[in-house]
Image (tube, rainbow, N blue to C red; front, top):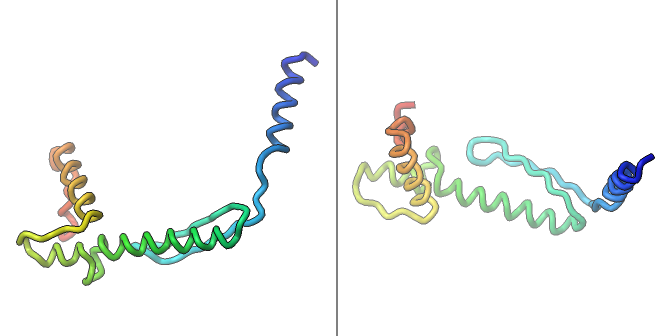
Length: 119
């Protein structure tokens, strides 16, 4: 066997045995943003994984509370109810609306962020 083949084989074996092994895997699923949101977290500390999953779901729920178009208390619903009157937007919604308007300009209107009422 050539030295190159032996070296490559040795490196492959080293990588296979040196890869980290994780003690815990957690899988969670919740209904958020109108769909099932599933997480799979892998790591050494099950408690830290649970904390990370909880924080991830809390952040998605926070964003949903602002950007949902089917929750009457959301910021998007309040913006839609304003009927074109000047309305103060939170940072998340402002970024989404601003980027949506950018896309509308970049696509010459092929993307229309205001299409939802017609759908």
